[in-house]
Image (tube, rainbow, N blue to C red; front, side, top):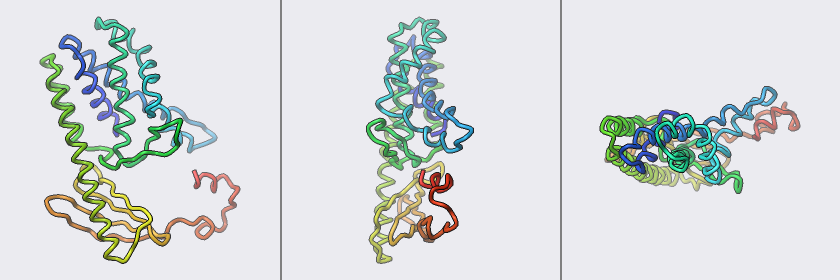
Amino acid sequence: MDPLTQGAIGAVVAATQAKPQQVSAALFLGALAGMAPDLDVLIRSESDSLLFLEYHRQFTHALFFIPFGAFICTLVLHPLIGKRRGLSAGQTYLFCLLGYATHGLLDACTTYGTLLMWPFSDARVAWNTLSIIDPLVTLPLILGIGLSVAYQQRLPVTIAAAYFAGYLVLGVVQRERAEQVGWQIAAERGHSPIRLEAKPSFANIALFKVVYEVDHHFYVDAVHVGMRERVYQGESIAKLDVARDLPWLDQGHQQAIDIER
């Protein structure tokens, strides 16, 4: 998700485990550690313009890397923040660990795909339950952070965390509803999709884009899942066939290789 939300959820989760006198430090450490995995965007190459896409949401976002990423954050942040706030190195590590651990899992809730199981699998996990930006996620988290800072209590962030968990569950329910409608649409057209996915549209979990594949074509529709389901019929497009659509392209050329990537 966006950096603000990543930092906010990292701060909230870290602060739920803080003592009252540690709340501010935990929020700060959790927020920075929660945003740290996105430093993978700095991995770039002048000769390979797609390299940063391959490494974004890769090893820094993996479950396996969480304790190591948190350790790196601790090495940097304990002298700058933790030690000055009276925290032990272990306490700093705990707050960094909690903040860092949220990042990959939160990204996996969106539609872009995250290598959660690296290095054991190159499959990109996308649960399609949240938009990449959603004010109904971000604003309550920020409100909880603000109240916790003002009162030096962890109750507001605990409530914010509970709200976020409930919103995630609602996102799963909404996605399942949208997929069910998608299967109904396909059946009405006499289609038996090879695969079907419902993805939330921008900044909400009420309107979903439903995409399914059949007979080398992608069919795209919009489904609103409120009190009642509404379908907005879309169009279809042929699946890309490099040999057919780009016959002039040499299969050994870098452009052809990049398409496969």
